Length: 312
Image (tube, rainbow, N blue to C red; front, side, top):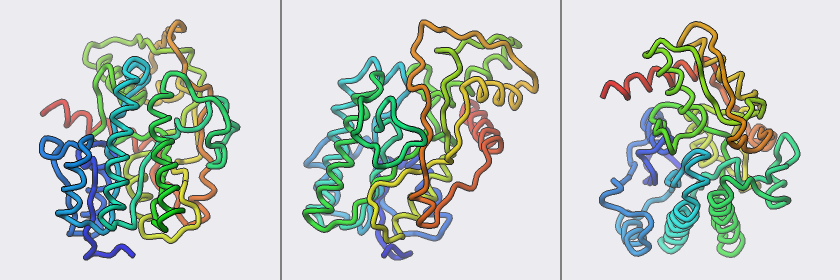
């Protein structure tokens, strides 16, 4: 069982989720935490990963390291998404087992589920249908990681859990124009309207698809909660169980940043992605976890962190 003396390795500690896990571990009093800069440890290098884990011998591992991005990036750089994610997770999971690490959390994504999945999405719907074409390469890599964890659990009696979060946002997010996800991209676009005193926003698709978002601090709490929790389920959805249309998020963020309404123009020549995607979080709730953070307050918190980021 994880305790304050346990040696904990956070892979991907500089990313959105990894930095939140690290921050929460420190807040809770865990002091024996290890991590390494990407410049010193290339997680796509099998031998380097194995040497690192042999040297440091962690008791618990959080795998938050991954190549991630939005629709544009996922659609246009599929080779990088499938290759790098397969390499990172395979190296970490196999090296964890090889060095005696019995407890690990692997983070996936809600995009692992079928394109036309029943809603809300239950864990058992995995591999029951065709994937969304724009990010199928990334999804397949993540599914391979899930199956790898399941196989090591069954064959070697490991305790490798896979948490599947809804779309995640928060401090330390990626705001790059070509690789960011929807919510940070939207925050940046609306902030630009404010700085340029404009009121017209152009978005991809028709604005009617529905999405679920979870603040990264809620996800980080879930990661620590389930690392401490004994469960029969190894695959667990982490979300809010609530979803809203794209135009709802756009208007909400406009009210927060601009304090006024905006005119939204939808570029229907661009893809919408999946029509609806909301997770069933019954399993997570069964074990005693549930999200705590309010959507509006979470967006305000994220926008404030974005302002600090652009001042650097």
